[in-house]
Image (tube, rainbow over all chains, first blue to last red; front, side):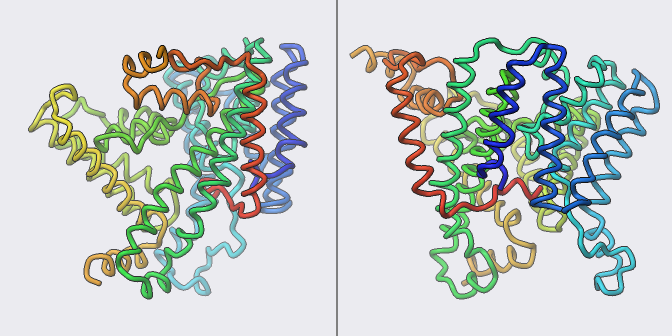
Length: 393
Length: 70
């Protein structure tokens, strides 16, 4: 729950934001550190893994300790990246990976029966890797212990982003906006708008998206199936953009502006443009830390397509430990590669295109993205069954 | 009239986008010729009230945020 619970606002957000504003510059990072630690411990204990979940706060402290040894060009940075990836694999992919070898959990010696995900692990992994890589490349300043702790434990963005960058966060932490009235006016407006989007639209659509299971799909008339999938497409956008609104609005109460995540993605007229405006902080991270290190667009055409597909495949795997997420990532990778082939063959500019061409491009993008959501919201067998029913009856 | 001119200058869609972003707290500047400034506490008080009413009316059906699971 978190962002739609009273605990979040009354115990954490408002007291911490006010205390942060009133504190001296020297103390402010420690306010974020202590409030972030309490936030992580409280919600981990009450909603996730109990005491063991709360103890995962140690991951942040360990990361901070290791990060103090990062230096440009130094191997410790790679060790830091490796340990971060190992944390993610152990908590998120252990059962998925061992199930591939031992499909029956009762015969799987490595099966973790009461597995849980530490709060925000998928997102703080990105920030840990970003810092290690950028320290290795000497692209970011080390900052002090308290500043790095406040970066990784800044609770408005801890659970599900937006994914921050240290070189962007540090100057804002060191020179916090003094416009209390403006920040609180905009921050509270953004939080209320986010909550309204979540409760009024996203949760309303849940009544339709709940039908996306095998039993309901097998009994439904064909005409209703695309409507359920469309409901999911709208819901995931409204839900996640509402979440981002609340996170960004919460950060604004501290006087800190964090990156935007969405910019009208469903109005875009090609798949590459869609990804430039959907979950932007993730897309930028994938470009900087996966796509470009693979060679980006500065290699042969064949390898560029490969890089695109590999990047989206990793995005799919990150979204969830399931074959359906791999297929979802592959779908988007292939769509992006096809789009790249198309613009190479038929280069054009937006201004020269007739209205019907733009409308058709929008429709194709919208339908493709929404069809692909089937692999995101259903397991692979159910998604295949969904398409079989949709196409063959 | 001024608002109509501003809409034509920007394109109606872009102006509406900017208006929604302003009302949603994303933009600090109103779209051109929109008469409500941030200093108009009456308007924003009413707007917050309207959003709060919507939230309280619909909060009974609350569910988890999708991305929390990741």
